[in-house]
Length: 335
Ligand code: ASP
Image 1 (cartoon, rainbow, N blue to C red):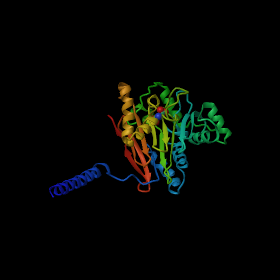
Image 2 (cartoon, rainbow, N blue to C red):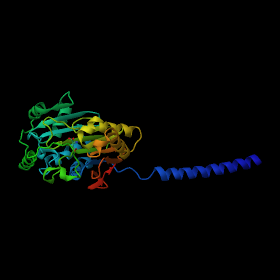
Image 3 (cartoon, helix red, strand yellow):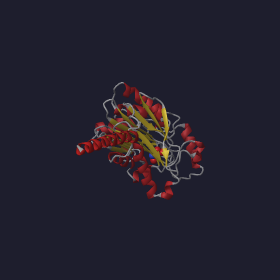
């Protein structure tokens, strides 16, 4: 009898403990459901219009790869965007050289670096992926391949970009201190760097990414940033998620940034935490340099949860799914 009563007491205590801990568990872990899929996210405010274009493909059941290519072509074509695509600022010798890469759900990837005279480097990158046994083509070889594939060879230096370059030539001070939020670094108060990095998950749950830029304004001729480098400017692993970067490409390359973010998510970090860890890694290696530069990461995991982190304040990213079409979120920052 005694034993039975004791058993009942213990069971009741055990049950209420279990109830308590499961509700505590619920409170601490299940804060909100993941965003609705399909979904597309991309860097900076120009990501809003790029996402809208990508959404046309995603919302009609299309493939994430097609969505990201179509999406980033919007800023590539924007004549007012001097940091991505055809109206990008030139290098210090007056050449507009563009970098881009793309990666699909199967781990296929393609890239072009320092390509000239071609307005849509992302589409050339896709063809490198689909039509060649290679991953990356650079410079004249990339342009030659593009022309062979039917792309129009065109002069990209716009009158506005030429004016900004000539203004810069007056001092020709090349200082790779880029921080978009501090616009006095840029000639004519124009932005002097930026990249559109886009990540999408389609209705089938497959992930793809694209990344395209004209790189740092007035860079050395031949300079290639992180954006066309798989693992640095972009990485996708369909089992885990995807990541992309913006900011001083050299620091992202040194730390293989986007690959690092995806691997951190594989280890269980949330997208935001993974981006923060990658930013911290950059700062830890070069604390003096990091104070003056911008690097931002943006990531999404397989569930569609997303997050971003940057060294400096001011970084933003755009999100689009069935719930929100034009959401712009400030990325958190270390400083
Ligand atoms: N990451 C680009 C580069 O270094 C520039 C940027 O996104 O701001 O070329």
